[in-house]
Length: 363
Image (cartoon, rainbow, N blue to C red; front, side, top):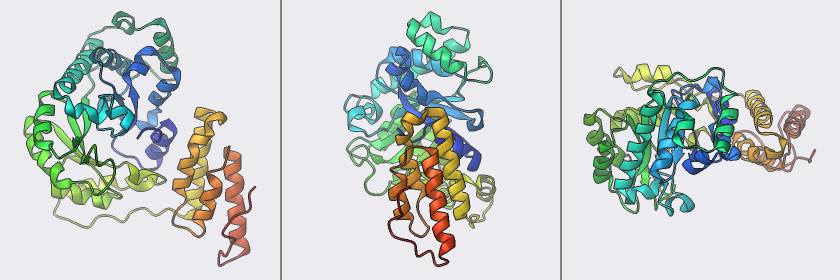
């Protein structure tokens, strides 16, 4: 999710939820190949996140070929092409979900990305594919933060998309995507024009799975899943190989806890999902502070404003959460967050009924 699944967020999810796989924010292939430092920040990752997939978007085939080399060079475990972003700026340019309207181009992008992966695996270097010195320098700097150099092995290619542009056209769109032979196709159960309105169409996802899987391609479903219990139900009902949880993880890195039990349950006739982990208020505050501290350390205090939305997402399900959220979205540092948490806890200790003011005094 653009502006959300940055390296700090993914690290928190990885250590507290342990999902099977995580995806980066989508990154424009033009930014990757031109070496824009700020854009390349979205491709930072920690070893705890593995397996971690780099998600890219754009519409220029040559840049997909080059970007695939970069993704491999940075040691990612897979490359995902975003063909599902509904953002007006992205889709109207012909990228993201806009590619649903240009199936031939979508296939060409997959072909060039796959060729880039294959040529890098065969030994081709970044200097040999025409990247400029600025890009090589920026990529080298990013690579220097990795623990070890990448092993030259083929990584899987996947696609994330939607069921259509302004109507459900999943049958013909699925038939097109299978020609590109990606290892995985992830399908969000809405059209581009729906954005995130209404409910995800899981019947359309199930239909797509039945059409795609016979080609040896895995299908992941996506849309409106808030718990592992819902995940298990959707997998059983739709026949997909797995699901993606996006918005359900906001302020809730624990949502992924219990995957082994769910996997075991799906292999039997048992329908009772394990109880979802419910963090105590103390745990929630501790993880929130840990997240803020990691974000500030990775991105610098000048970017802390981007952390505020995450702080707000942690604030739910406890007394006066809304009042605390209103203060947290005005913080400027981890120290501010710690002060506010301490203030809240002091109010709670002073009043056993937690009848603290609806508006917490600013620190």
